[in-house]
Image 1 (cartoon, rainbow, N blue to C red):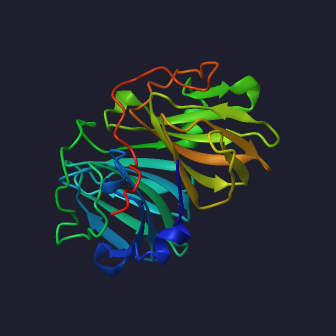
Image 2: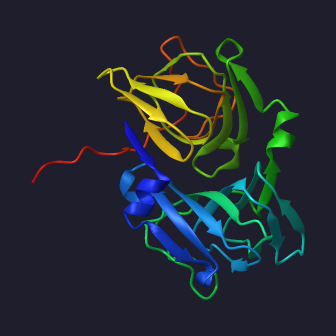
Length: 279
């Protein structure tokens, strides 16, 4: 089990200037963590815009706070960026991200994962860090509001969990991504024997209990926890809890928990975080 926070990453010097000085990125999970994707938060300065073209990656972006615009520089299509918007861009997608006078905070998941110190070159690109997933032919945008009106909203755990599947295995990005709400006062015993799951706390507080050791950790906004095959755990929200949940291998979207708290296998699991060995 791995637990980090944005504050931890900032203290460790992982807030990197990007977009030619228009933004910073706080790098929380990196290629070295062995999850097959990386996790960052881009913080876009108010009133600024950045021209970007990820020739060597697919990037999924969840708008956590602020407002702005996304422009496809090839087609001219424009989307409004508000909290709850997901946009995904890849090698064919020259695009511009513009923030309004409210700074944008965008959670970014890269596959292949970033190593940690990358910053944009003249084209708005990062250097290659591995094999690029198939993805879509072109960039695409979804909103949490659209997903709530489809079969991709799943109610589970006797009504205590609502999972909105923003990305599934069908999107071919190599991971799935959901916005999950867990009701205050419930207790979820989970054990992802066949996956690694990374969760970012967007709203609320909860206790996370390692069922191997019995140790509790209080989770709050900005905390990130990673659980996998060796991590039976209990999640106990103190308030209603909103999470951004990323699974590797990706979920198909219609999975239900087994009695032991696992999902059925959906592909080979990554190596995941490795224990440190004393030299």
